[in-house]
Length: 128
Image (cartoon, rainbow, N blue to C red):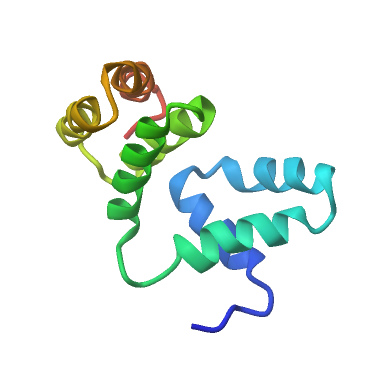
């Protein structure tokens, strides 16, 4: 697969599917770091990987929640992706199962962090 010449528009579209308010805020934050940062980071993450056809976005979000939960070192990203998973149609009971799976393979402390993020996502007033 060859890389799109200008991946940022596609990246912003994918990010917008996860959270309609996120694209411009994320872009501005990255471009405050360096003008090319949004194109490089978002292009890779959201166009080259998340935007691939091999898995649907809902499945990718379930995997992302599991991996971020297991890592235990990215609480802000975990909170974002818990909400994004809900936005892509991941049900509450499915997130519960992911958290339980994390407890077995990554440990109870990692699962407890995931519980905190999940409960916040479940209480999100913007949730559909």
